[in-house]
Amino acid sequence: MDRDRERGADMTRGDEAAFAQLYRDYRTRLHQYALSLVREREAAEDAVQDAFLGWVRQVAAGKAPRQSAPYLYASVRNRCLDRLRRRPELSLDDAHVELLAAPAGDEERIGLQHALNRLLLTLPEEQREVVVLRTWHDMEFAAIAALMGTPVNTAIARYHYALAKLRTELDAHG
Amino acid sequence: MDDERIERLLRGYGLPETPPALDRRVLARSERIFAWARARETVTGVTREFACAFGFGYINYIVDLVTATDAEYRVDLI
Image (cartoon, rainbow over all chains, first blue to last red):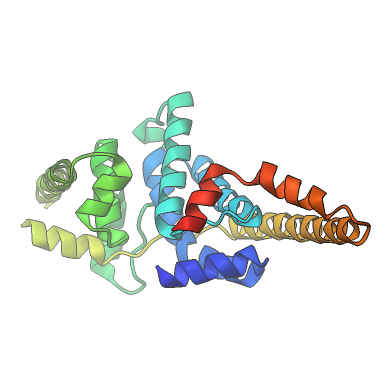
């Protein structure tokens, strides 16, 4: 977090390199997070772009947010939810996005990737969000709950419901 | 399969790469915003110096007073 504050100060002085580093640090995670929320490539890219440029505008105006991660996650989330309010979530058949990437050479994971991706996409939105944030973004349940505006126990319950669903489906697939 | 095994399975996957076009777009637009902010800051600085040099320093004071928001004031106190 101190590093975030230093970066904010650098960027207030117009240090584009500090922003480029911040962008590199968060782009992949925020892109996956946005994909998991809107299940649509173009909308996810727009959300990520607008969140980062919103940050830049704040910094350029001398109002750098105190912490970058909570700001960026909340910004992406709000933009995605706004998008979903204006246009309902795509049906599963139309959702051609990949939320995960198998490591090269890992045959077991490569073989399961398509099925697992599809299972994640079929989870209810709020369960999918918790699984994504917990699994790939290393967020504590308290941080997830704060981001989603729910009690911590709700976030934990959603996570376990989601895992139970994945387990059932994966067992059924053998 | 238990929860722990599913967690391990999921964590073994990485994240999809961001499209290079998105990277280019964000970085190019952010550069333009920073450049505009720097130009604005330069113009503001020169204007303030001129105002002071010609005995209108009180105008700077009034502008600061009017443009400072409550939020900024609170942040300064912290």
